[in-house]
Amino acid sequence: MQPLDRDPGTADVPDATRPDLTSPDDRDGPVVDPLADPDAPGWGRPPITAEQRRYDVLLAVGLLIGGILSLALGRTAGMYDEPAEGWVAVLCVLAVTAPLAWRRQRPAVVAVVVAAAFVAVGELRVPETLFANIALFMALYSVGAWDRHRARAFWTRAGIVVAMFVWLLIAMFQAVTDPEGIEGFSNAGAFSPLVAYLLIQLLTNILYFAGAWWFGDHAWNAARERARTEYRGRLLVGERRRVEEQAVAIERLRLARELHDAVAHHVSMMGVQAAAARMVQESDPRQAAAALEQVEDSAREAVDELHGLLSTLRESGTEAHAASAVGSLSVERLPELVQQAADTGLTAEFQVVGEPVRVPPLTSLNLYRICQEALTNVRKHAGSGARVDVRLRYEPDAVELEVTDDGTGARRVARRGTSGGLGLVGMRERVAADGGTLETGARGRGGYLVRARVPLGPRTGGAR
Image (cartoon, rainbow, N blue to C red; front, side, top):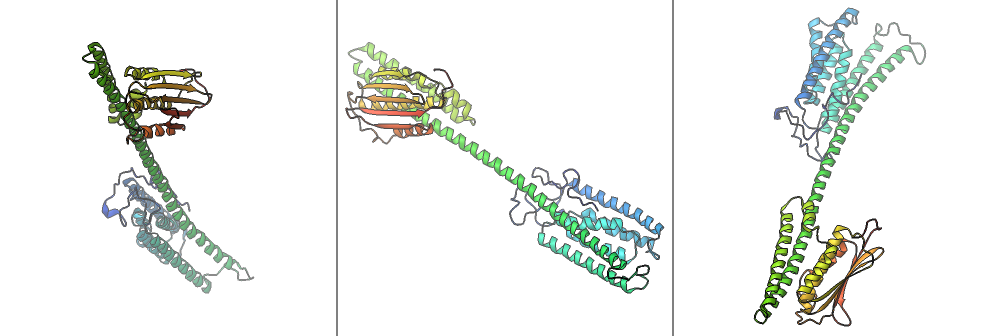
């Protein structure tokens, strides 16, 4: 007998995307959620599809035709001296094969009916055993492979197997006690031909039922393992989507930080320029007009930068838009930033120390923003007229940005770090994101120091 571990095509493959073509009346037990955890209690294989149902019908029809042909051959061969009537034999063959058309919809019921018909075939002396054995094997296999109630599957098969062995033992007892039944077998010796024949029958039945039981359970476990793999795959897909959403949220938080830095820088610079224009508007109208032009330029630059950042925040795919929005802000533009600070009244100088090397885009952007925030703080806390030095230092394995001021401006608004802003916090987060260190604090001879040091990988690029 050849057990079927999987039906042709996708018969036994659980697929959450496959449409459920069965009606509620065709389902044995509660409806199974194809997205449910296969390790959860009560899990069952998905209801069968129309294709699987057609396959079962064709299987039953094929076994019925084969059983009738085998019945005709058995009668011709004279399997029994007094076989069952023809119509009785055909009904028995029909009863043992036709129920297999519902073997996956009602596996326990089908197994009981087929087992009862199998006993009737033997008791009524129907000359057909081959296809009856195949049908019983398929029925027992289907219980193990498809019954969602595993306790019922166990006890149904156990009851059928026990009943079959009791029937076999009764038949053996009748055979050994009937003189005509043991005619031709010698009883001589401890291991007579009769005993050998009975042991062969017993061993054959043990292997037959054990095979049907094992292959049924194996098909169920294989289906559950496939469902478990698909379920874990869906979990991984969901987790990947969550990670992508978190990445988008983190990117937008970073862009929000860019907004804060840009607004703080440009608004602070415009405030200083407007104050300068107001102070000289009567004594030097030309200088006041120049200061107002700088306010206009700063406002236009701020609007362009904010527009790029806000458009990035509105898009679902932030990475490409972020690159276009803030990709031009790098250490290459630090001289422009320092010049802007000088235009607002600070005495600012910029110096590059060491041989320039390529700095990763994100690190370059972060250093630009740190310098921008540090210059903004100088204007806020040291006031106009303060002297500020900006140094970009390239070391063999790191790049260092240092912004210092002398703290001797025209006005001092408040102590640094007490305004409740996000300036220093933002600097530390940016440096930490690049694996660097940030040093901030008052200088012994007056003023303030901001030093950011970021490690770099091996030098593989050219100078920037």
